[in-house]
Length: 222
Image (cartoon, helix red, strand yellow):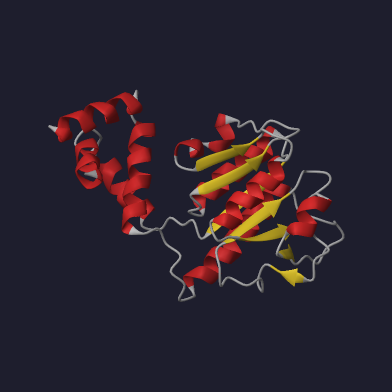
């Protein structure tokens, strides 16, 4: 049913777009994901979203108990269409909710902090990894530092204590994606997951995509 639905969508969008969806989905991953904690500067929030898309990261998790996650379109460059965004802003402990959800899906939590001895080049990749990044000024919270499976750093050789948070995300994703490419891990989306993702992309690409999907489902069910 889903394959037929996808083909029905492809008949409604430019052929070049469907081909691009196929190419990009084949390189997408959920083996790595990003967990942002209380990011409040819009340019950083937007740049992180864009980096996730550029490095093939399908999901971005955002904790918003204090600061709302806002994106600037000119910086994000439409990345919000292609990355699945999960917000945690309800209940007494959004951070714990996010960590619990990720761990239930098999993720280890790696908290990025400049003082960690374990580097992004050595952190284990034997299980899916959720990379946690903190606020622009304070970094990760003590809470995430304590419950993380790993505290991890990006090697630096200058005087400045840390990278900008959006730069940290980009550097970390590039390093870990390269390690996955060179590994024998099964890190790509399954064929079924690729179809699900491409259906979402079709919906987001088309005007009134949700309505179009319902109409196509009705047509295919007859």
